[in-house]
Length: 127
Image 1 (cartoon, rainbow, N blue to C red):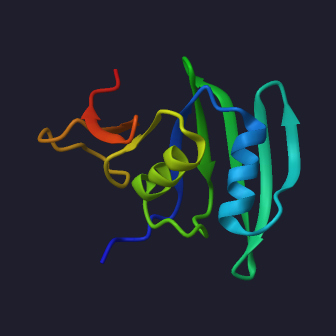
Image 2 (spheres, rainbow, N blue to C red; image 1 turned 30 degrees about the vertical axis):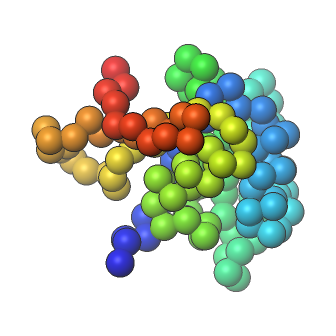
């Protein structure tokens, strides 16, 4: 069984905030409530499983990529990769994510990142 990560973060190329928001509302089957929005930064909140989950979209996290972070993982996705797969399918955009949960030290056997592009998943070094 896959470990359910405590939080999730993925990176979406050229993310359109309205499309991301609509995808999340459809996937979570709940409306997102705006907490704060300004200059490329969005903070939404949604009620799920009797709790509140904070979602942050930073449109300018890394070059052409936006960071989408679920502070509390109350999502239907167990891991970053599960979420990235769903985002890639729904948004038809390149999506990147960590290949595992957070670790103090990364083992040298893997790149550390997975790129989802044109329906394929590839490990890569994001330097």
